[in-house]
Amino acid sequence: MWSVCALDRDGRVIEEVDADRAQSTASIGKIFLLCEVAERFVEGRLDPGATILRDPALRVADSGLWQHMAQSELSLADVALLVAAVSDNWATNTLLDLVGLEASAARARALGCEGSGLHDFVRDARGEGDAPRLSTGTVRELAEVARRIHVACCGTPVLGLSQGAAQLVEGWLAAGVDLSMIPAPLHLDPLAHVNGPIRLWSKTGTDVGVRADMGVIWSDKDAVAYAAVANWDPREDRGAEAMQRMHEVGMKLTARAW
Image (spheres, rainbow, N blue to C red):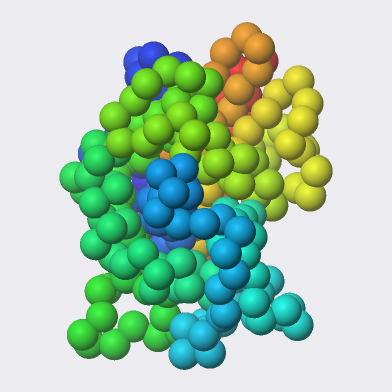
């Protein structure tokens, strides 16, 4: 199953395919957690400089750097950056334990989402009583969330996120190192792409049978907010096909942003 939605600065549809289908989005849902944490920083309910100790009970494998780091205590701002930049699972669970799943779900609703959200902590294995998916979403809603983050960052009021929070979230996500999906045709340095004539931020999600990407590509000429999700039977080998479709969409959006 393939879904894509791209919007211009004002929310007009540039391209869409099956945009209202709810699909598994893997780590994409972490963006709602980041928005909630950023808003709490701005409101003063959380101190970004306060340190937090990682809890071994919240450790999970796969994506992230904190599991490999000697430092067990980090500032909340640095933990949020780990989530945004490398989709750090241990950092995600740490923040989620701090603010709660319901707060993340409420932030998704405030951002206009009905079929998109983060449903659980990251787990090495999902049991019978756990949510079947880490996150789900529709590309129409996710593209609109991406658009709201970007335009709010630029000073346009939006529902669900203040300008200060949007600036934090966009700054964190701009450091993201996974440019393998929609942004791939830009051929940017994954480790150094914050500045330049064409800019972007993205949040990806990868799991068995899932490839997902949402974000914004912009320049002085234009901005495009997008979301693309591919789901397939995990027993099938369709990862390369999904990535090829991502790259084709990325070429179209890049041409427009230029």
